[in-house]
Amino acid sequence: MNTTVLVLGDDSDWESYERFCKQLQKHHSKKLNWVTATYDLLEKNELPTIKSDTIIIYLFFPFTYWDKHIEKEG
Image 1 (cartoon, rainbow, N blue to C red):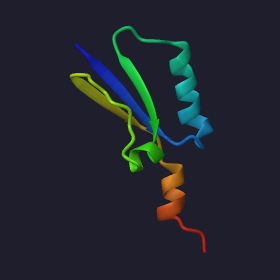
Image 2 (cartoon, helix red, strand yellow; image 1 turned 90 degrees about the vertical axis):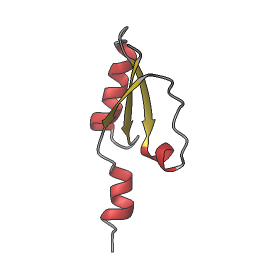
Image 3 (cartoon, one colour; image 1 turned 30 degrees about the vertical axis):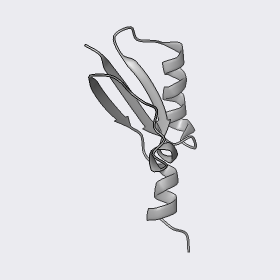
Image 4 (cartoon, rainbow, N blue to C red; image 1 turned 45 degrees about the vertical axis):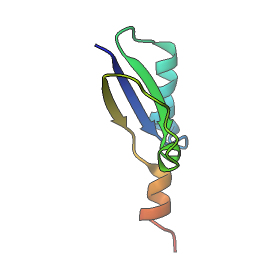
């Protein structure tokens, strides 16, 4: 099976997203392809091309989007 895990998060989320991405670089899986991207790339429609039969999407909290559009200051 040709499967890719797409991991979406914010660069500002050093607590979980950045730490998770660093762990992916250290521990490669032979059964899964991993692609990391940010919500900023998603908004710009610039996600990497994925040519897998199956895509699993792993979402981290969108801090930047939340701060900009949901919890506006003032």
